[in-house]
Image 1 (cartoon, protein in one colour):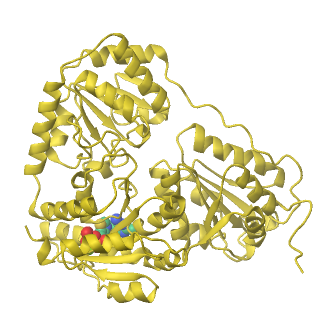
Image 2 (cartoon, helix red, strand yellow):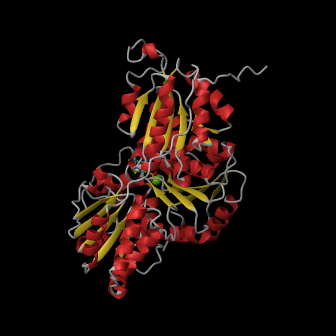
Image 3 (cartoon, helix red, strand yellow):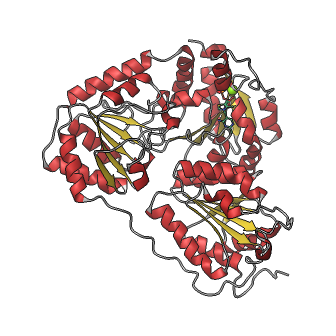
Length: 540
Ligand SMILES: Cc1ncc(C[n+]2csc(CCOP(=O)(O)OP(=O)(O)O)c2C)c(N)n1
Ligand SMILES: [Mg+2]
């Protein structure tokens, strides 16, 4: 008979019930001996559990879920290898400011740090994740947990979101929880200082060649970004995380083209840059430092960002939405309306020079992205891996909406696209989600196709196959380094995907690719679609 229902609740049950009360409906994970009582809690709270094939998949799925829903992705891991396997996904979420709650086991309290050779032993598990989490805590007593969970949700909802890791010793999880396990109110978010907004508005109003640079922190501010840009006749550039905040067909848009030299020059030539929720991170432009010589008005929720790398003339610590709304209003009240024609002509010229600067290889990539654009719904969420096709997609795949393009160029870890797409597809089942990965990148996490099959996800997984780790191979060629370690033998992707339970097809023409994508989005399982770079139908 069922002896699982205990009253009062054990810590594992109380924790999962509390998370459900905070709105958690899904946990990505892999159980083990030390987390059994957590799993009793998952079952009791009615939370959906998605079983990864390796904990790296769990943390990446949690990240993908967070990006598709705006809610924290949650993973449940065993101590030791569960945590170290998951490190890549946690560190990526840290780099990209994503909310993630990592709950893991830990050894017996008495054994922690002693080096007794306990199973899954790590000398200091808290320290392992401390450098890529907002905070990492080894829980000492059950009554600490409600406050730690509240603190995690304060990070997720009220400041720059980042992962949080709670380690639960084996002997703590079954203990009686006690009272006080209730949801605590989330703190309000920081709002811009009106004096700083007035100063920023005055500076921007005096600009002759203004440029807006929007990052992931500016998501949700599209209407105000558009209002400000149109009022100032400013051109608008985005990072990968900000792609689509302004529809890329807008005449003032430069799209997500920080990789392209003419856009980099525009950034250097602008006399005023409004930089919103954007790190200007290397992963977006592949340079040690971008040249920004104009004065900078910077808006960011994190004070560290406001003084990082590029000094700002006005540095506004705020949630981006109220700051952009206030700036838009301030510019409208002082009736600033610059002629848009100058900015539009400048944008048109930069766009034309960006197109002219594309290499033959980038043009081939652009043809693929045009085909995908035509075949996919406008709000499709594309998860990109670290493949040359994806680097070009930043500027060659036009989007009209924000949060349709995810490329994690800062942590830049191969293999992330497939598990992130699984998490996104689970979080947003009504939305088309597509993973795009190279032949090298896919092999890092190809095992998670089994998870996608189990979850019956209508997920197209596009493999860009050039039989090489081509980005690195070409860098070796350029430096006359012999090709060492860049031509791994790939499996037959079609057979591999079929063996894991997927549909699989090799695209034989543009029409075939479109038809395969259409079918994949309606299927009862994932579909691997192999696109070979040397396909004759992709030749110009
Ligand atoms: C975990 C990890 N290891 C190594 C690298 C270095 N790296 C960057 S791109 C790349 C090649 C990727 O090959 P593939 O996925 O086939 O894409 P392609 O460049 O061929 O389009 C490598 C090895 C990385 N980014 N991440
Ligand atoms: Mg490759």
